[in-house]
Image (cartoon, rainbow, N blue to C red; front, side, top):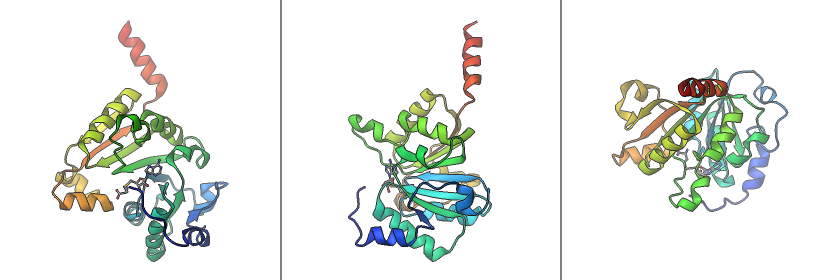
Length: 225
Ligand code: SAH
């Protein structure tokens, strides 16, 4: 959803460029002051998830990414109020993430309640489309994982098919992840998740990882013998 521009947002973000990076960083290790693993959320919205994860996992560095400046500024409000050292924000389109991260440097990628773009002609904009999966595969460490939550059944089904076709291994699929006590215990809720589950809607989730590419080819050639 597009939001109305917040007044003075550019100056606000610039004043906090230690949190919302304004340029491509030389190294994330320098930004965070340590070499902890990096996990990112593409389409972080107002930041509850990325901040909650950073609080819960102080031994991991988290980066929230969103293409709307005003939305990032709302996440910044929360990060400043929380004073958590292991979280940063990026105001950038997910399709340009290759400029911001060295290849195979991200440990895990989260997508939460991504825009469904229901029209077929907009399918490429969905954050689970193959054009984005190519980008994520470059960013993620070998066998790197994607965790995707949504309330939208249509987007979920389409995303499972898109991921499978791409060669991702679906480790676990939940049709109602809140009903799984093990997951519910570790879950960090997003703003959308809170809203939708309050209305009684089921939350779908998939945890998938990229394959070792040579391995996939080996399996295929073995099968054809
Ligand atoms: N994850 C949050 C917000 C979900 S709304 C939550 O669960 O509450 C989806 C968000 O994705 C919006 O804020 C939108 O601006 C952002 N978004 C959509 N396409 C994007 C893209 N290509 N790159 C980065 N962010 C994107």
